[in-house]
Image 1 (spheres, one colour):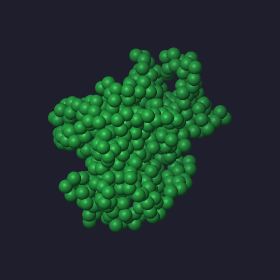
Image 2: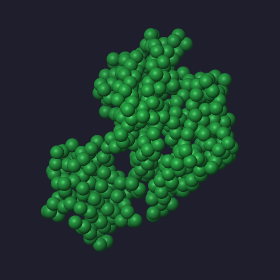
Image 3: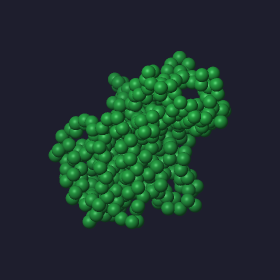
Image 4: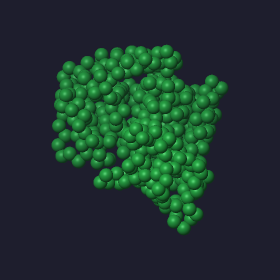
Length: 461
């Protein structure tokens, strides 16, 4: 658990009261506040109405404005009904990076991530993750021991109606291959013609599993909910039967519509949500969606997520940065809010990159790892890895990446950078550590990938 995490705990007691507590990691005393008249039924009804509007918006851009306003209304309602004024103020004042929801199993179907405080959703400001408390007996599977090279299984929907899923799978495998230029870090396998039985047979062989395709969710036919595969669905009930056996994957990313929707845990063992089932079998982290997501946006989110994860970001921060990238770069105003994470958001799966950009800020040095695959960006736009809110800095001013073993720095901003006493714009192939100025801010690019004895930096104007 992270020392800079805020814990928001919620439980529904036998008297019908909702008890809410908030505290930082390490606090000795964790006080609760009781809310005796929370209209949970009204919240759920309005939430389902909102989902109808959001699903319609995912199919038609003409409904975007209505969906955005409906989402804000839901967020304000959640904030007003579920949080006391004291807790709201605590959240406003905190400097924590992560919020971990510790939820009673009767409250998992509420979209806590969409609580809106001061016109900002919690999922816009924080790295978030869910941990679920249940009264039922949980049979733990063996703990998974992670060791490089990690094994990843990318499963995509088979069929002409969802060719984008296959494209997403191939793109993710390409990203993973980019990580292996120097050492074998992750071994990714792609399959697009898989039956539910094959998933149950093979899933334990992998550390990470990514599913791109269709998922069915219907409250009236709960037993059929799940991943749509060849010859049938992989359901939550199928997954739950794997409890108590060999270790399950550490991470499951279910990039499919409704794949994080859930009802409260049922005491008879039937689970409407894939998230509930996977977590109960021992999966450490599960990522899914609350409503329908257009193919283009879902693929965009997945690529950004894995790039941030591979560069050494905590998993919750990788989700957060991917969310912000979709909000900034795509034409949908609501798809970014659909994703949620089960598990501790402060967990890191990959070591930070050896290559790093260091910002010599006032009184401290801020270190930004350059990803093994993908790129590190600097500019005024808030989705950049390094944000400089200056009028002399372009929205996307500087991009640092690795291309075929070389370190490349593309200076795109019209005002350029100052390097060795001159203003530079264009592309640099960097072979040795460099220091440059960006209109009053100094930066160094260094790391063990760069060696002083190599050839000097090549400038391309």
